[in-house]
Length: 334
Length: 206
Image 1 (cartoon, rainbow over the protein chains, first blue to last red):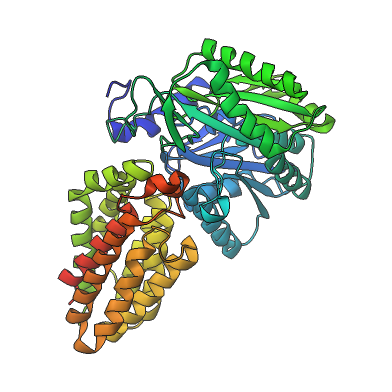
Image 2: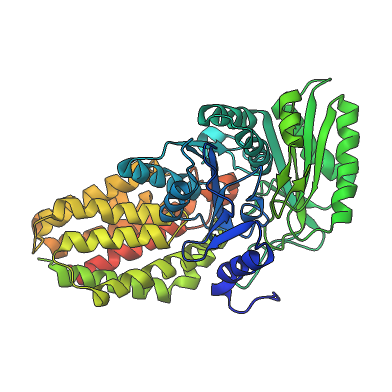
């Protein structure tokens, strides 16, 4: 294992210290509880947006804290859900009187911990909390017989769009409805060229040959649905986009936000090359790209590979997508 | 009969076993999950093992509650809420009891396992820790009349058998479920740590 670290046990903590120092004007970090806060929060009268999850997916979620996106992000250990204590503290701290929305990715641990936090918060009384779970990964089949589909790329788009709605003063009820509708109209599929290496484990999470790729991976180095020989970007793009389009039942004339996400170990030039292929398939299918996003936004440590997310987007969604955002990870319209 | 000191040596013994098997548990998780079960359990159990030295507990149930809360707030993942809930619920039936006999421990075990079920919503043969918990509980109840020692020994065997049986199962819960048939042929890491917890109980509680 070759990594820029001091001690595997200190990676999350030291990275959060670095993040706080790098963004002193915008972020405040509670190092005891590992929570990244928007510096100018809580915003009175605004719905608070809290997300969180295992570390190792940067910039998600801490890098999406700021104006127009999240109010707080709870950082768990590497690839491990944060704990209820963190979520409760974050929820109370960002409540500006309009309630708090939890954005939770559908992983057994994340869902259980956020659920426990909600139970404890209820017993504690006070803040009104709603939860929305993202589960957009079409690679997971037979979702009735599994933990369900994983929450992946749609989470980033949801945090941006619902963040904009909250910033404009939407109610908790409306923010939750918007998030639910995004969850049901966005789908993703990912692939990996290499495994990732979790610092504490010290070795790659899975073995993969030089000429192999893994289709249908998640974002934790868990193996995907299928192992196959590597092929061209054009064919890989088809393997990712077609199941997503089919699952979305996207029709000619539909507009989408198209998101090509890097897993952390793939250079941007390859991601743009992939986007070129993705855009070609969409054009052929008659699907209009309303907006796009290309880059490493939801990573899996040093894994090489990418995922494709498509979110059906009508005018309101596009308007909220274009609204100003000022976070370490996404920044425009200012 | 098991008193507070016995429960504390159970937790201490389990923490030591988890530490010794940290890499093994992580390796099992690497095969079908995300390679962190050993790391997470070792981190949480190190905190829990330190509790007994750091403060004096008035009773078994207050101690077990603290064990549960500590696990919930240090382990993370799914194991934190599951093991945390197990100990929190286990504390209930032991309230007011200084020396727990087979029937007390049996009730506490049942409450704990029901907590795991409620939290995880797993069914038997989903390839989860519940596959070790349920046979442990059933074996305990079947031998309960023979005393705490015999019941715990039977429970340990039940948990170990349940753990071994997860090898052939296709996962339907947790991250391993994303693998579908590729999860077959691997022992479930959560069932493995559960078997360790029951085995250490048999060594220390009776």
